[in-house]
Length: 92
Image: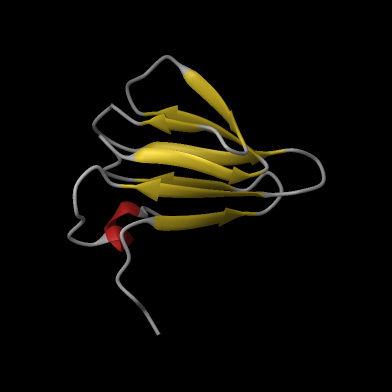
């Protein structure tokens, strides 16, 4: 069953990556593990650890990947405004 939510929960396996579309003005929160984040049209890559968050500011897509040899990561994407469809944020 699919329930409407105000955020998108992302569970990543060891070194697994996810491409997210339309992330401008969303808050990315790392809940467990460690994630690498890059945004389209940005030369800056960042690493977030559990408990850290970052506002994504670039139009386009962002890629998140779990870092670590033995565990994955869990993160949450929270739109700055009520979403029309959070599932549309997933590109693949």
